[in-house]
Length: 385
Image 1 (cartoon, rainbow, N blue to C red):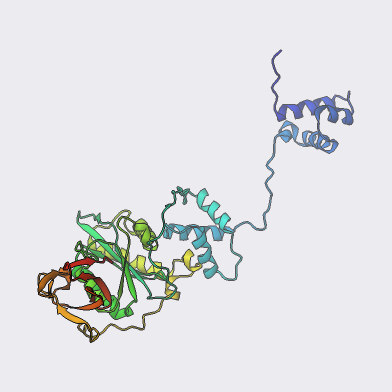
Image 2 (image 1 turned 180 degrees about the vertical axis):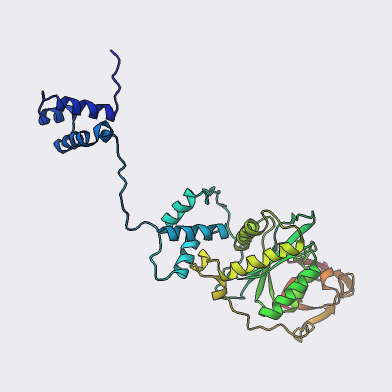
């Protein structure tokens, strides 16, 4: 015998029709159908007042929710999300509280549901975490203790020309110091941009970069003309490990936001792209809350460095017991009757030699150790940054 398939509507109709026939008591019918007496009377009353339509399943949603987000708040949040495409519920909530401090703010989960309902958010793909750590940019808490610098990956503009965005950021406050659209990677242009930053914000204690041009070179010391310029200003050098962009993770994360908000799609010309970079820089510093800063904006935490940019670069000075040599145009120095290659980037600069052991000399440029010279073999063991 086949199974009899019924749904809740059929069961309710059978219950009501059987009860109205007058052949069974309510208690007996309720036990047979496995329902309570109040439920049984409820179905009969609905049938009498509404007919068969009253037996349909009704929504159990509350008719009124005192905590429901107002239509005005929903419209404001949706407008902010469309204006800031990379902002999530956390940043929108922070923005709402700042704009309307006297109003009760919605929860982060309510904002997330609102964005999903309107197709303004997508589930983020989980990435496998790196199993090997170390080598990252040093953790700092004071502004100007460390600046990070990098080129965002190049992309073509509408006129088919290339754009190479140069970005400089303060590590502690996440303050975006510069975002400049360049037509090429040029050490001269980068030096000019950095000189403007130094004149405006003062000198940092250290700068972190990758190992690419113009920040580094392929020579044995890894120094470039630009990095020598930083050393002459008394700025320490920090480098990421080759092929490890996660060593400068905060800067790379900023690049992802920069690309999403300014380069999809790119502008028609380099000039118009620079206008978009300027707007992004202003918003990033003045408006966008940062989770790493307890949802504060970078402009509230950053302050210029107390170290001013010098009016002229002084030549290198070394202690009296050092032997001082000037680097020749080919990057060599004459030492103990022989020419030894040091670095082409140090052309015309003074380096100092300090005897640290019998027959072993340390070679310095400013406060930066270049390597060690063994006079017995006349070979230099170079030290990379």
